[in-house]
Length: 66
Image 1 (cartoon, rainbow, N blue to C red):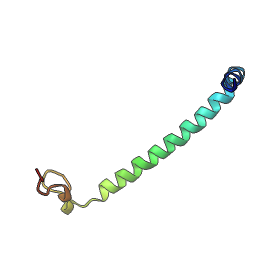
Image 2: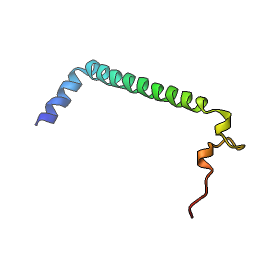
Image 3: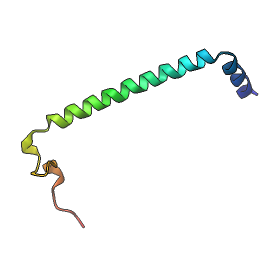
Image 4: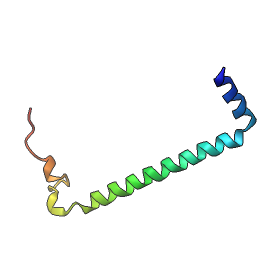
């Protein structure tokens, strides 16, 4: 059973398992923070003339097709 050996190894070396999980978690956090920064920049780059009085992009205020 290959899965059984993996579990035995993880039980014997919990610090390595946690380190691997922490590394992946840190990478995901960095990626999400970068996406958030990019989205914030894009949002703030929208000029006031591109927004309707309600603060909605003019491209979203067209006719509703139904």
